[in-house]
Image (cartoon, rainbow, N blue to C red):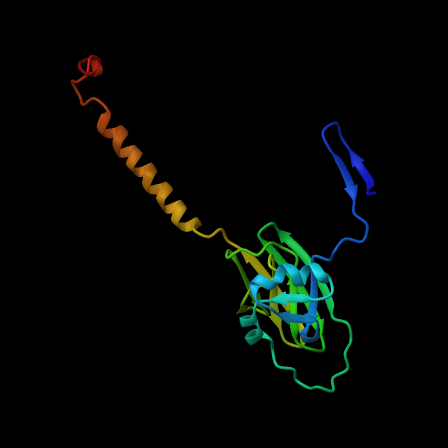
Length: 182
């Protein structure tokens, strides 16, 4: 039932009608705080109309400035400058969470208007970032956990390999002939 957008000998490309947005805004009235074990059942009942967060995420919900503020739909602008960076500009007259449809991973960090903010595990698999009312820019960046340690260990291994190769070379006046039968 998908529209064929193009094809090659190896693959077909299909267009998905009415896809889920990559980012959305959820105010407090569309956010539920539930235990992790309850997320699959709650999400299956109504997946696109509410955001499910762990109970400890309630602490990040910014205070509402005024209860008589007119409620207008939030505006969301999602861009992906690179595979390791997501940029979301949001404007809302009430506080809530920006939900990003990307797999949650501890390597993701977020800033809002340049200040560090938490990345919350949302709907059991995605990410949410708390935002107060107003216009804000949320920047998510991904850095592979353990990457610096891996690079350090690789350089150390390369150094040890160089030492082993250098120590196995014959010294001036020696040859490998004596090693052949051993």
